[in-house]
Image 1 (spheres, rainbow, N blue to C red):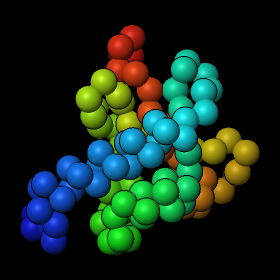
Image 2 (cartoon, rainbow, N blue to C red):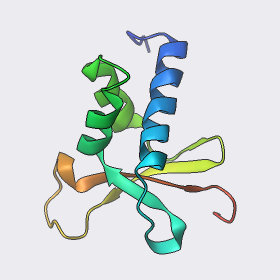
Image 3 (spheres, rainbow, N blue to C red):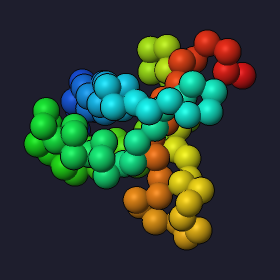
Length: 98
């Protein structure tokens, strides 16, 4: 499958979003942290102007390991319907996860 961005551009965007999530982490259950995709996009946009790239990465950045972190999406339990604002990027140390 063809992608409109180079591998190095995709990797850079993943690193930026991961760092944004880590910098803005709020500890929850199990020491993981999370933030909304919208908030991650707003913060990452300060470093990457291509919002299509940021949307692509935040959508597909799920169930992956980046450095020592597991990145996955989680539903916001306070919202009963599935909507883009209810999905969070959660980052937690990869040690101890099975």
